[in-house]
Length: 467
Image (cartoon, rainbow, N blue to C red; front, top):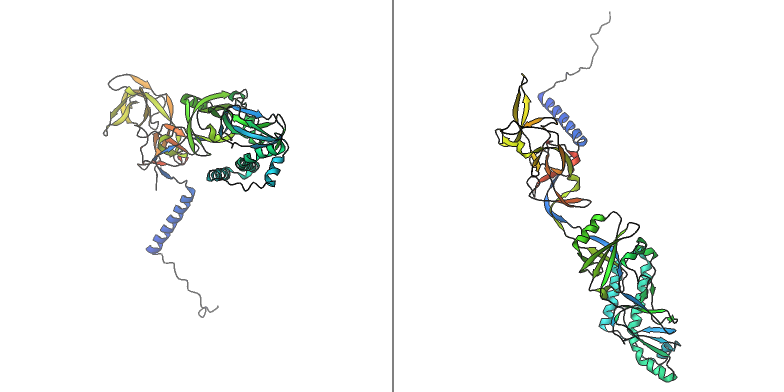
């Protein structure tokens, strides 16, 4: 038999559980479950209702329509202009000259008539054109650079041409012939130096193609260029009344009707931030595209050289309570006649007398509290949490009964002032892609500084909200 007295074994200490370890383990499990539930639970975020407004303004690119007459040259030669673009001329004013031989420029250089100097007013005009171009330039529309180049060249040359007049008579006298033809305005109006084929357009001619600037072609009438007889030489805007036509496209009947009802709309011109009131007229072509014409009786001279004009319609601002669209929800309610709603119970709150039956099958009534969410002249919208379709309610102090069946939906939000999701009906005044303006201080609606659920899809009706 083996002797085990000399064997040495490892001593295993017993596990001593004390109250501290148990408490620590319980706290650890609780925290772990809490963290797990936090990440698994959809979080409810509140939103404080504030007063605000949403503007219904819209920015459009419009086409300017004016009374424009193209004047053609009766002579061939090199043209020199003596009226700035956008300047008004009277009948008989000198507008341009035609140099039949092209010797006028050579004569001026040969006789060294001196440097042309620009006045402060002339320099200010050039600076304004440069600043205006820079402010509206977009890299995607690089072709505008060439239009700007022609415009600047024409302006600079027109300003310098005033010094030529003193030499024109000398040239005619030296040659013994009238090499320089003087051409005066046959009508009064505003002078411009471009043609684009839009001169005779009317509202009824409008199509979507006219608004495609990629297909737009403009011809600048440039100073000191060779022209033939019959070529366009300048253009006269003969009437101060003018209009800007915008395209609303299809499916905009509501906006068209709104503008027609207003008759006059305030418009801001983005080029110079000037505002004016335009008379509204509309036209819908055979393709179904709607166009709106805004007619003005002033400021034509400011925009006489512009065909495409960016404008903003300054429609009325809607003011009220500003809420995010994500907080808006639609909910169904039972609709009952007002005379069936009464006050009762210990709290004296609103409710109905619900018909019930006892153990013996005898009919009796029980007062049931229910919240009113909206009202018309004859009916109330009641909570559907305690009532069911087919229930009978009894008219107070009467034996008349009403079977609950009629339902209707309301637009509203979940108010969380009381710690649970309480539906509040809202009346939307105006809405855009992100926010809505609703009426304030309504009987069953919201008030300023109420807390609502930011995302209505994250809660259920009457759900308790935990911070």
